[in-house]
Length: 169
Image 1 (cartoon, rainbow, N blue to C red):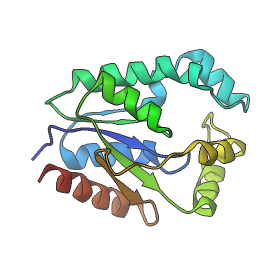
Image 2: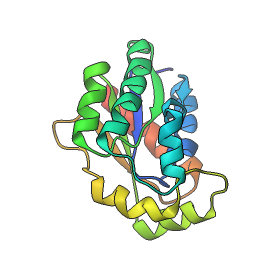
Image 3: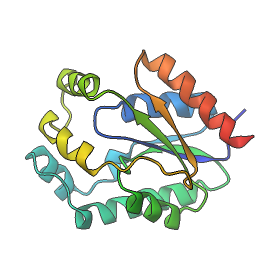
């Protein structure tokens, strides 16, 4: 059974958004969109050089993700986006009312180790500190759930799918 929710898989770099997102989408029976694909080339170049994005850099990216999420309203979908600040999530909600957030959380040491092990990604582990400094966890009035990223991708995605399903009831 598919979901009509559009789920934004959020969290700091290295939590597994790109790995877990497609698994959650498959478990929910909806399409997946990779949030990194919505970045303009200038953002990729900036992050590849080890420079964190600022809010002005993120706005066109968030708007593009919001347009995709809006296009999936009532149909369901899963898209990844760090969505670290409340203001970013508010912007996504403004573009796509009704989105829900799946916050992948975990121990900094585990996340840093996973970042160091991945190959060919533009986000260097050196930017992890800025990610944690920027992170504003989901607040009580925000539709969403937090899921710990310890375990295998299959275990994490199973917990995530179950958590999203609970939002539907």
